[in-house]
Image 1: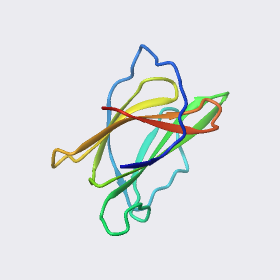
Image 2: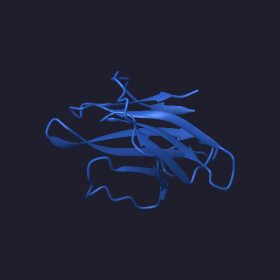
Image 3: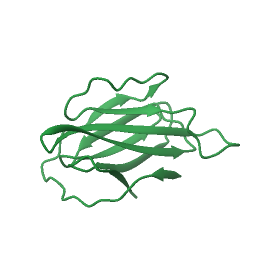
Length: 128
């Protein structure tokens, strides 16, 4: 398992949002129009750490209001498993708890994806 991220610490919001389930986007992805709390997960076939293995590479693209403007945070993840669905809920103004999973199997991967309120970075935390 590999990830590209930058750690940051943020206090969790005690009032968690509802769980959302989305399809993982495969193929072309347009990030032109977004609103506060939009989340997209994109399968990236051309982005790979393993040259001799098939694996899933994913972009988690999330949007939130910060410093009087809409901000964006991106997190990249590579895993040997292939997923087709994601479920997530917002746990702070800039962080989500997210699980990528295979709806036809039993594989899944859970983590927290974070953005910075000023838009200066993103990060992730693996959940056990």
